[in-house]
Length: 153
Image: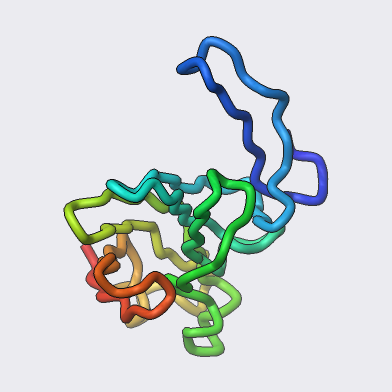
């Protein structure tokens, strides 16, 4: 399922996985064939997805919400972008492999944050900025109006 344009594909089941619809692209969510994470919020039932919002790169990680079972999506947060980082590092930053867990009124999102190794960056101070990053979204704050809290794990 990788023909251009690169988008997120979906297939649905209404009988707990016995049969599935034909896969189709979500037109408003590009993705560079990278892992994404999707959960259903409790108790309201909205869908939340963390994904690379680009058809070709893994340097922009966003969160989107659907309130109509995935028919339409609204981007509510940018977890991190290469544009947030220093110019020398921007080209080499890779943000990927998100996962989401809901705990009460908090969404915990973890993802990998690494730089492609180059001779410029080997043994440099930015090595400590690499690794697994964790952020928390407080669901008591309206989605799209929050300050994510980050920590490196």
